Length: 191
Image 1: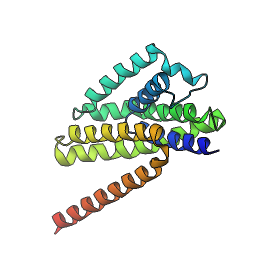
Image 2: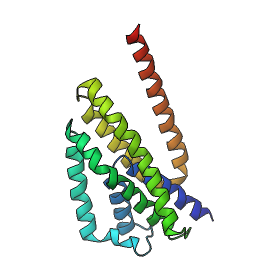
Image 3: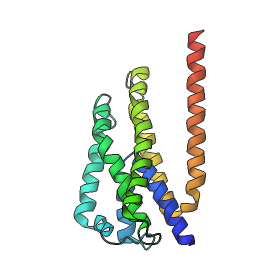
Image 4: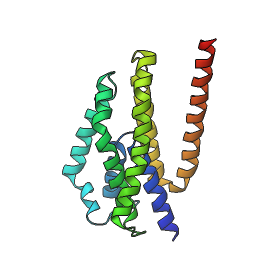
């Protein structure tokens, strides 16, 4: 029972971080499942531990990292990632919950799809505004921050799944504070 709840917390953390970067959570899950006993993946999800899949994830991550740092290219990348990030979220959610919870695969895929898709929608909606307000100068910095958040969330989700709730509350608090700061700044400019 406890392991099932921890796996569910891991699934939530990995899926939401997939909304920021599709490949970091998948690669984290694949590497930790391959080299540690922290993650046990059932069939067919164990195929992501295959060396060819790990290599492909590394190549795709490198492409994503380059594309997401260049203004204008990152907007095109976000359009392309609209299909990929929710799919990655669905895969990691289903892979993480199958061994202990035995959640129906369609339900698990749907949960991951919604979680990653929601995070991606917020990210891809905010990025053009950021590009316009900073003339693209903040895009690489924000992209690095997103990657760090995705990586940290992925590791926490697997290693300390009970901290996912605390981590999510922290992220929500930071987002609310940023939105207030931005609103206050806009009101000051309007005066």
